[in-house]
Amino acid sequence: MTILITRPAPECHLLAQQLNAAGISTIAQPLLDIQPGKQLPTLISQLNKLQSDDFLIAVSVHAVNLAHNYLTTQGASWPKNVHYMAVGHKTSAALSECSGNDVLSPQSRCDSEGLLELPALAKARVQNRRVLILRGNGGRELISQTLQQREAIVSYCETYLRTWIPLDGGQLCQTWQSRQVSALVVTSGEQLAHLSSLIPDDKMAWFLQRHLFVPSQRIADQARMLGFCTISTVGSAANACLFTTLSKIGTMG
Image 1 (cartoon, rainbow, N blue to C red):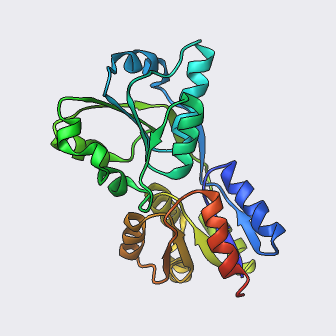
Image 2 (image 1 turned 30 degrees about the vertical axis):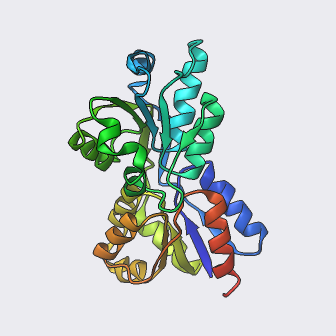
């Protein structure tokens, strides 16, 4: 069996190296590049608007790292006395390290729904409070929509930009079939939709029969709508969690 990893670099290559070193055939094929976001120049002014007991939410490690790099180059620092929150464990750890603050994140369901279930984001806590969401260009609309319904004052700062890598889906499918790819790892709904759009019609049946690994139930539901039959929800997009799961199924052939 061969596992195809489609998450962005460098995590894509790091996970593939780990699996290959463990004797599990793996192909790394990032679908997109990560670059500094166009709204980074507004980050400092947006952070300065946050007052005590307001909220800062990071949706990914990329959002944290690009924000921190920009603040460092500008000689600026992360604000104090605000509530720091993150969607997943890895993002939480990165935000805590960069900001020097405690970060709250969901413990079991590491997705938008899991974050919104936290008592800290109940209506009574966020009503009339500012919430700044650090993200890429688009995505995580559910967080903003739900918090606005809870009467929070929500704004975005797109700290990173996702750009799709030009790829030949037909050629890639031939390679993947020759390498006997039997499992796919996709870490976002946007990546899943884009990857599916690359697959030629005559390869779609083969593609949908691969065992798909995703981090959240939301993406699993999306995959099922696309026609995937075998879907595993890992519960996290962190490489450590993905490696643990994939190394188990990899040794089974």
